[in-house]
Image (tube, rainbow, N blue to C red; front, side, top):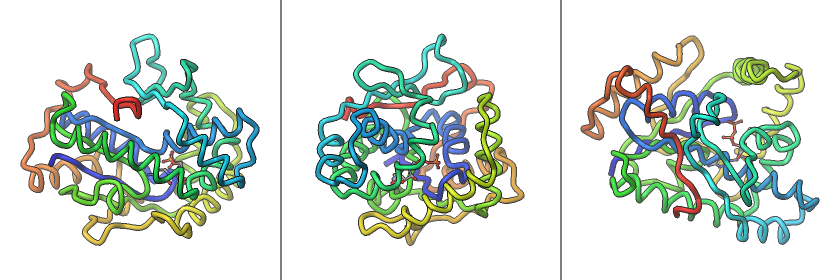
Length: 257
Ligand code: CDP
């Protein structure tokens, strides 16, 4: 199975690194966080209380989250386009209102059951090469432990919370939005705590995961480190950057599950 799992705390660089690894291996890149964010967004839209576990569980079970590779008109820095009922919510799911409730929503056992089922199905299809790609890079919190525990290469990315807050601040300002460092730091700490303390599928490294401390390394260095592991563990070949530059195929969809 050609699957690489990348787990780790909020803003540890999983998506940036995972996307580039996927590009170079001609693998599908799939960021599972967008699905939890989409459910959180739907809950806010429907004005449901995030602590109402029955109502939240039902929303996740009924929601059809559409995820696709961005078209050339949508090329605004996104890795994937996320839609619900045709509405493009790609950037809306990264708002502070969603950040504030997403971990509570993701701790709901029915939400997890439904989304992990969809994610596993996507992972198995693409990991076995049946989805048109050579494999899959799947990013989240519980991919190596719960969603694809049989993946031959598992990564767990770490960085001190202050460094992660600086990275998130930079990302937000690159999108032309205002943000406050102290507020980001508080939000990340809170999210990490809920994600690692929850009863179902808590954030933790799989026993056989390679732990990568990213402080002091460039994105390219970490990407290269993972590519070396992928070549030896999966027996795949990396495609040079220049050949992957135009094929920004980055996502699959829950609807394909
Ligand atoms: O990008 P960032 O690291 O801030 O977060 P994300 O990967 O988009 O995930 C948002 C939230 O979804 C996390 O804080 C978790 O609560 C939840 N999540 C999860 O529980 N399991 C996953 N496999 C992915 C995300």
